Length: 207
Image 1 (cartoon, rainbow, N blue to C red):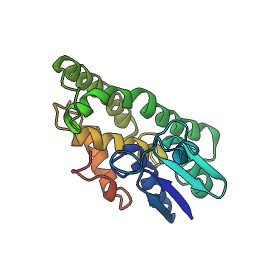
Image 2 (cartoon, one colour; image 1 turned 60 degrees about the vertical axis):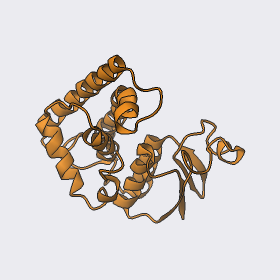
Image 3 (cartoon, rainbow, N blue to C red; image 1 turned 45 degrees about the vertical axis):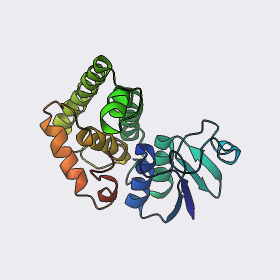
């Protein structure tokens, strides 16, 4: 039985849960992080010295970094369904997973903590505006890619790249702010929401 440590309000935890649901994997989940057991406990730090969720535990031990966990699950249990076995198509999937983590997600940090999950200290109007602008700019890159593929982020087929991208798109849609008009992104999000495995993790009350 897989065990996942992390709270469901975490975007990164939801990536892993959605991946498990796409693959039909059984798992147990424990709440860790804000409002729950502290990730600074020695018990948790022994599993992930960064003190961040999620952590996956299976018979081979602990694994952290959400996109890595999603890759691992797709590679081990997906049979090529979510992560291609062929080198080049797999690299394209992983390219967009890396883009989500390193280029898209850093843009929304300030805006989300100011507007989506109001947090003390995130109230500078100029920084909010800059973050919103950067966020919309990154989403415009995604818009361009989706216009090319006409389907999913790495091509025609749904992949684990769409899992990690989908939760970020959900956050963009659910955060109350001025959003760029991106029809391909909106159509993509609507398609993703039709997937039964995404439904539980695309709730309007949890951006």
